[in-house]
Image (cartoon, rainbow, N blue to C red; front, side, top):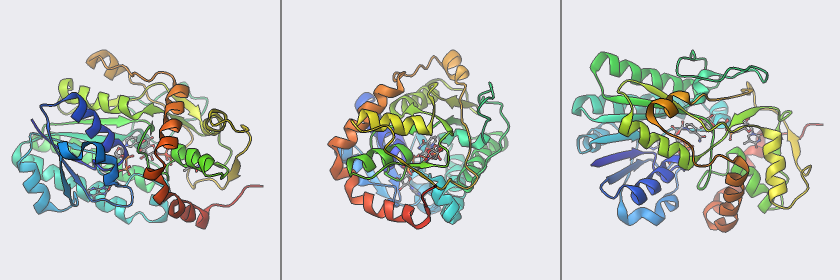
Amino acid sequence: MKLLVTGGAGFIGANFVHQTVAERPDVEITVLDKLTYAGNLESLAPVIDAITFVHGDVADTVLVDRLVADSDLVVHFAAESHNDNSLADPSPFVQTNLVGTFALLEAVRKHDVRYHHISTDEVYGDLALDDPAKFTETTAYNPSSPYSSTKAGSDLLVRAWVRSFGVRATLSNCSNNYGPYQHVEKFIPRQITNVLTGVRPKLYGTGTNVRDWIHVDDHNRAVWTIIDKGEIGETYLIGADGETDNRTVIETVLELSGQDRAAFDFVTDRPGHDLRYAIDATRLKTELGWEPVYKDFGSGLHATIEWYRANEAWWRPHKNATEAAYRRTERPLE
Ligand code: NAD
Ligand code: DAU
């Protein structure tokens, strides 16, 4: 089977390629990636001889048409993915997340190629801290940020291409991922690498915001489960019951790193900061038989800290520029 993975040099896409090379030797993989600031060929170094890498843009219709024509399956990870960046400049989010997805959909429509769309729980907006509800496949879309609204728009394009043109697509909306190869701009790797470089971790606002953490390998196993067994046109939510507030995450990172749990700084909050995400993955579990392997967030976090400790050469070149960008807007809270 010929598989085209977009965004395969990013965090989740690279882990997906690693997993697929290890577990599915019959799959011939081509990665299409623009290598933005978030893409890193080093993340594919362990598998680079087993795949074909194409440096290019998902919005390049000529390139995309050629690559899709030669594929049996497209898994679309490529996106601008960071909420803070989308608040500073939404423009690349509209271009890549909306126009890029449109280009892929037109190509899979033309060549009748199976398509899986990777999306986020953020399309549903946020939940109150004391709300017993979680997001399900029928929750109404209500995105808050430029990032999540462009992801929501891309999901809706996919749904429309299924219904109007009979495109053979499935969708998945996953909660917050953690694990190896995640860019140091994101919450968990930022705090781990802060501790490793002697900088105090930074907590936005009060830190009561809750995210539903899932290990990236569990996300990617779920994606393959949906490709193998999911129903065309359907959406599946992916989550591993990992709800944890941000303050607890920072305190745990500090504790697992042998530091004082209180050795962090409160900084200015993210504008429009979503309060809580929570996934009900019942459909994926009962209909398709998926279960997460990493059921204990603490041990998954410990393994992730050890990965960053052992792989400083991977993240060190990006740390200073990332922190300099944060320093331009972030202020300490009294
Ligand atoms: P990432 O930012 O780490 O990686 C994105 C990758 O896409 C990079 O390699 C980048 O170079 C590439 N890319 C960006 N624009 C491109 C373009 N125009 N053409 C080709 N390649 C381009 O992102 P991630 O965290 O790995 O997220 C991957 C996907 O998963 C995204 O669609 C995101 O919305 C979704 N998602 C992420 C999470 C999470 O917690 N990180 C959770 C749920 C869903
Ligand atoms: O829910 C899925 C989404 O999870 C994905 O769609 C996004 O691509 C991914 O980036 C992530 O979005 P978040 O905005 O939740 O992730 P982020 O790592 O930026 O922040 C996680 C939480 O931590 C959030 O409440 C903001 C807070 N935070 C973040 C940073 C970078 C801090 O308190 N301090 C920080 O330094």
